[in-house]
Image 1 (spheres, rainbow, N blue to C red):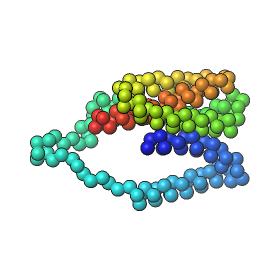
Image 2 (cartoon, rainbow, N blue to C red):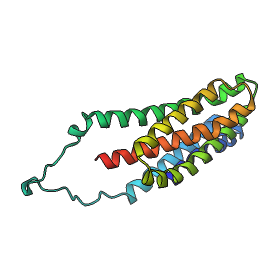
Image 3 (cartoon, rainbow, N blue to C red):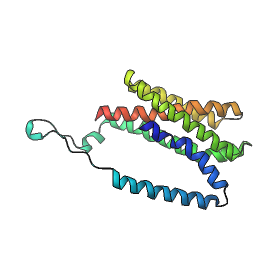
Image 4 (cartoon, rainbow, N blue to C red):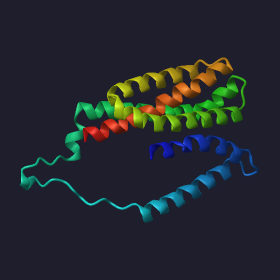
Length: 191
């Protein structure tokens, strides 16, 4: 599921580049995104149903937990911080890559291709990390992935040669996607 969702990161940047390069420019790009959001929102409204409740009854002697009791725990805060930091890094990378590349003398199309490639690596790594988190401690997987993500951001920030950009692709792609999946696995196990 998460691997298929990650494929959007491989498809959207080159697709966005193609839409912006068309005669419609940015306006056409945003119109296509708005139409896609309406279509996907309609599908969600029609197809998603709440699962039946299977919470243990407190009358049977089981403790029922509310969400507030989880949100105050340090374990939740650490996992949430890792996921939020990862999403913030991904948003920053996606938003500054094109101007950063242009500033370095590379094209915005090259940035779109690199981001698409990084998304493809991330999608593949998401599939592999599902297998990995079943066999290794997800906490250790999360730590390793966060370190890879940080190294990828550093490669992008200080890239002065094309080889550094191509090194960024697998390092950040794996770090970002594995962090997202390992954090999700930890949340599921915790709750």
